[in-house]
Structure formats: structure tokens, C-alpha cells
Image (cartoon, rainbow, N blue to C red; front, side):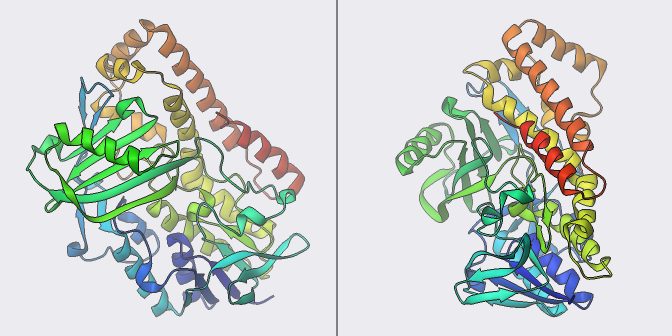
Length: 442
């Protein structure tokens, strides 16, 4: 077989996988529905800058990004503030999404990747169970391998046959409905309040953040249920009472976007097909950040394709991508979905109890760039911390029961994820992925 690669959609991981493959002699074309000037949302993204070095790109010039502020977390009643204290070498960067796209697209084009903008991907083209191309608004396009970077609602993944074992769509509590806008800044705030995160704000299932920047105030409202502009306006009016930095003029943003917040896709590959980025749900389940993960996954995918000397790009040969991704990221990300599920089960007053009684503290909320699993996030707890947490849980049997349930689900997810077949056998994979998906039902 040949070396013709299609990247369906302009997701970050798809573009950088294409860049790495093009550098190694592959013929790569990216088909993207948006224009080049309209790639990405009109906002900043927070991620680990080491994602760039993982794919052999230098970190962008310092004038293109800034270091993220430590966040201050509050429960619904705002009784207790949990202030992060992230070491400087663990701070993630904050960078304009359009600058990220411009940077990686330029690098990909220099490597020989071709881009077809303004061309919507509509569906996969199948020959039996093999993906042999994509249907687009400009006609059918064929390739030896299709890399699916179309995002959470990918028209490629969603139309694959069930027999491949690839979950077509997300379900309840696996996506975040987000509204984000940057308002004119009308007041300065103390450092501890520059990035406030309100959890279960107004007892709604989700978060709200207020990030005061040099010239604007960034407001994000994220929930597990759909909401409309009437609710947005009412929420922001309430926020202004305690946050005088939020002006009334929207400088940019002001749009709704959906973000995956779930475990990674159980099966990433099929004959002639590999999913990456949001198409494969590679975000951190409790945060929603996935750019650095996509970059790191693109290196694993490119290596698997390059190492397929027969050029078959079958599920069997691409399974090295699946196992490689789970080894470096997926095995840590999947159990975090159990933590997210516990948060969705909390009733009114329970999160405040958790904050006020030290069951969660500032150390627990301090997540650095290298923290990609629960062990790294919660590592280093002192005996005194453990005693405080246990005392708080023992004194509230309802929350204790929910934490125990979370622990059991976390162990189950860890065990099942670790039992993924080492080599591809469709019968074994289908049996395993059924168990994997069952770990995360709400």
C-alpha cells in the first residue's frame, strides 16, 4: 500500500500528526471546514507547553503566551477559599487559540502538509469494515489512512459501523456546555482573586470562572446541561455584585462551545482509521484541557504509522498507537472520569461541607503541568491531611458513601483500563471495550 494520508478536520493533534508524517515522506492532506483565518475560538487556552517539545517543535516565543495565574476555588456558599500554589516550573501557559493554530499550521506546511480549507468533512468512505477515504462537500477523497481530527461530533467517527467497537457519540455528563466572554475590565482585584473558580455556582451542576486580566475580565460559565442567553445574563448580573472587575461591554468571545469532559475513547483505531484529540476525547475529564494531550498523542500515532513497514495501517498495526497512548496518558485520564462522576452526584450543601472541613484542600487543587493522573494530583498527602479528610468523611455518612462509591469506581476503571489487550484481536477488543465503557455510566 501507499503513503497517502488524509487528516479529516483541523484538530490540533491531527495537524501535528500530519506534520510528523510528512517529515517522514508521507503525502498528507488536511481537509477543514473553516477558513485558515477562522481556525479556533476567539479566546485563550491553558495547557502544558511541553506539548510542543513532545512533537519536536520549539516552544513559541515568550511574547506569544503568558503563564497562567494560580486559581482560587470556592464552593457554592463561598465560605472557604482554596488557593493553588503551583511551582513556577509547573505552571501551564495561556495562549491565544488562533496563535496556536497559526504556529502549528505554519510548521505543518513547512513540513509539506497540504491544507484544503473551506471543505467540510461529511462521512467516512468504507470498503467493508475498512475506512478508505472521506466524503466531503467537494467530493470523495481516498487515502491509505484517515486520521480523524474532526472533534467531539466527528461525522467520521459517528458514522462508523458498530462492529468496530468505536463509540460513536458521547452521552450525558460527558460534555460541558460552555459560554465564554471577555468583558471590559472595570476594577483591579487582589492577586488571590485574579482567577476565581466557583464550583456548583448557584447550585448549578458545573463551574463558573472569573479571570481578571490586564485589559479584560474573562468569564466562563460551564454546565452539564444546556442553558441559554437569559441564564447567562442572569448569572453574570449576579457575578457583578461580588466581582466589580466585570464590565458590561463584551470585547471578544461571547459564544457557546461544547467541550468533552470524559474518559478517552475506548477504541481509537480500525482498519485505515485512527482518532485523535477531541475526536478521541483526549481532554482531562475534570478540567477539559486537551491540547497538550493531543500533541503528545500525535507523536505516538505518527510513530505507529511510520513503524508499519507493510503500509497496511490495519487495526492490528495501529494498535501500537492505542497501547502507546494509554501507557503515557490514557491509563491516568480514564480513572479521573470516576472523580468527575462523583462531582455530578453531589447535592446542595455537600461540596461546601467538603471544602469547609478539609476533605479537599489547597494542595489537592494545585494541579501542575506534569499532573496527568490522580496519583500525581493527590500525591504527597501528609498523615495530618489524611486524618482531617477521614474525620470529615466519618462525620458525614452521606458524603462518605459517595466517596466510597467513587473509590470503587476508580479502582474498577483502573483495573479494567489496565486489562486492555496488548495486541489487537477484534473479539477480545470488543469484549474489553464493553467493560471499559460500562465503568463510566452515570
